[in-house]
Length: 491
Image 1: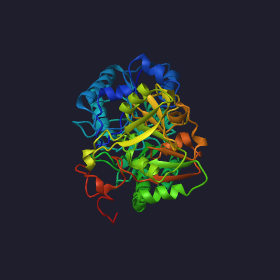
Image 2 (image 1 turned 90 degrees about the vertical axis):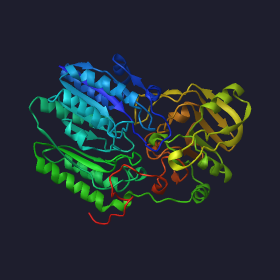
Image 3 (image 1 turned 180 degrees about the horizontal axis):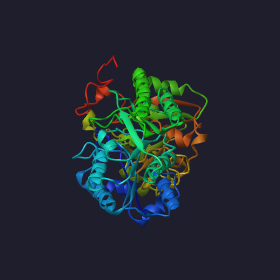
Image 4 (image 1 turned 60 degrees about the horizontal axis):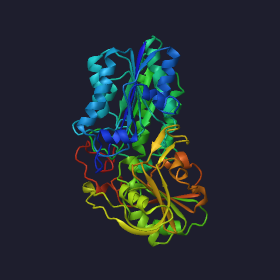
């Protein structure tokens, strides 16, 4: 038996000014052939679970590509066709395909990157068994569903169950090949564009919806139940919340289970809308907190959802209000890193920090902030994730520097990386647990690596293309009407 195992992942923020070409995939990680196995086999990634299944079957594995880019703007047509071509070509002569995709990839020439890939494979191999693992932020489409045997999504945000759900769907499809089960899928998506900050699976309302999915999977005949929060920063027709149920030959059960979950999601739609707070008030509230560490979230400039990671609005306000003993992870400014390298460790330097990127989609120009501090550390930015999300995966933040202003230590990176793991700090010699404030350009993923470390968390509404203020965004392609862009008050 020959099994195709491949990964092609990108969460596309169509409002982002950051270009997503092949070089960006190479920056985060683009592996071919045997390098796929060497890099991922001993990790907690979905393709590692697929490799386990292949080993148990004594199968030959075909690994044309494993690649992922940090979220950013539309994938270039050239990059997309290169990646998709490698996978489609490899699918010509295999007995099974096990695919690790995202579900929110938008390219310059196609809205539905994953559906387009699956349709191309299915057109060429009409009977090929195909298992697909998707991110919780997948914008599910009919094309994705129609062109695979079974699909599943993560049940956690932060995503700490990637390995488990991949193994689950892989075994479903292998079982179908052996005639043990007959996967039947039912899916749907209400007109609900939920906001990412409300999708944490430890928080309501997602907590209840995920519990419903787990309860469904405990019932006879239900092999997989998924709730997708969706990715609202991808302005494409199918963006939004959805659910898909996989049963063993029972379409009615799949539809009934799906409907119950989606009815609950729609009933609680108001809870999927983030409630903002004035930035100066939120920072002032944080300043009054005495029991640290206090987590400060600069969520509107989160590169893990496609932001440029160099907006200084929140950092400037924290400095203005003179919060003390702050560590920041991380700010993207390759030019600043180079200046600090020339200055050398221990020397004082004045920088025009950040603000290198304009954001035309939201009408903002980059505004650097002049800061003086000491170069505290210089590193190559390389480390390995030890926390529960992306466990064992190598990280390369590029040349990295730490600027110490006295009140604040800022980790400055040359490659975009969302700080979901302590390694963002520990790799440069900072132990965040001993500082009063931890300022992260993150939303929810930080919970994976930082866990119970913060004594309190304050969400700071700054500027950036991952804003949760829909009034700052112009949606042109998403299906309408859709809540909350449109006030839909009836099911």
